[in-house]
Image: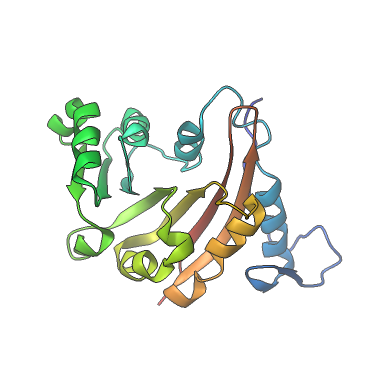
Length: 220
């Protein structure tokens, strides 16, 4: 109870009669992917009960403890703390363009920094070297560039993704856009930058309303 995850449909099954379906952001979907899309859109009506937005964001990463995690725009470092509390042999790198936010995130997570579990860098995704870094999970929460200038982040991010790695873009609604419309906007440019949309989740609880776009890197 209290958990409601999106799950891929079993192979060969769909909730329709075998006809391909469409999404507003990804064109024609196979029956199996259409099922995953609908499950994602409906996911999490109970998962957020008693937790805040960043706890929900981190829980959705599905961390086992040994992952290499990247957070884009960590702000004060609250999500970093949640991630580090899960990681065992894994590690997290966080990048933020604001020196003030980098200092705040380091201060909040000083024990994890000293232990070598987290590295917090002033800069952007473009400053990370793919020859050095490879990430199993990437978290970006309220990073406006995924809506306004997706090429600034998606282009340099693709080479940093490990095989099977997942990008999680967590968002709320900018003025004049609903959660569903915002999710569609974030998902639309993924293909052009080497990513494959896996699902969109919409979460509404008494504590918060947010969405999540989950994508993987396309082979080749």
